[in-house]
Image 1 (tube, rainbow, N blue to C red):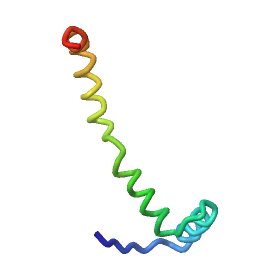
Image 2 (image 1 turned 90 degrees about the vertical axis):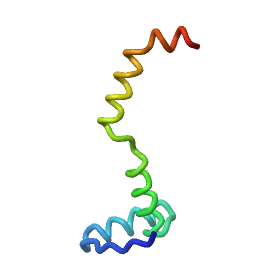
Image 3 (image 1 turned 45 degrees about the vertical axis):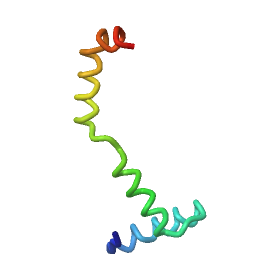
Image 4 (image 1 turned 135 degrees about the horizontal axis):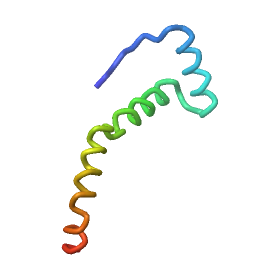
Length: 64
């Protein structure tokens, strides 16, 4: 998927500076940042998963 976004000048300058510091093209840094954001688990999902695992801990131990 191709995506075009327009950044305010101050953000564009920060993106360029940070990308240069890391030795990346600004597009690569933006892609990596977006990928990181999208791969982070939803806090609500994490809370529900934790509740289920905690509730069923004894069962999981017996089944192991």
